[in-house]
Image (cartoon, rainbow, N blue to C red; front, side, top):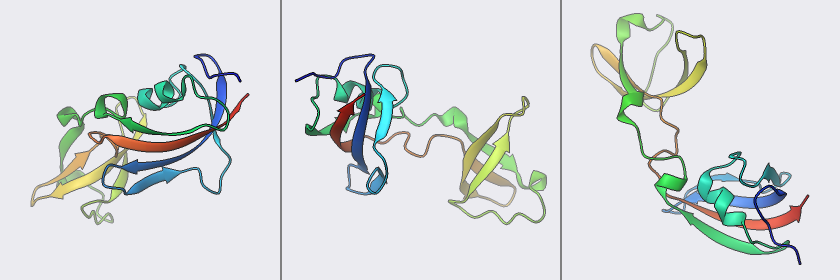
Length: 142
């Protein structure tokens, strides 16, 4: 039976969770995830984890921070003056907002803290700094 190698297009079912067991994503009830192995379409640990799998095989991947979304980057946490916030916006800690950079690119941020003068915004990926666990099943090598 054929084993997955870099360059193969594969389809997998997955259940992603944090190390405390909290689910953050799953393909349950959806079509399997399809991607090209080694093309950087998924995080490095997931990409590497499917190599050598055979159709129908199941496994659990324990992905360290460095092979997931990387460590939190303090440069992506910024204090934004409250006076620059639209008057009709009532930010709350945990709220997700959209910002744009000077080039017009839009990116998501999360309200991390609120003080009297500033709103602290975090532009890190929500899973940055987290080791991840994936239960995967190789459905098909396309």
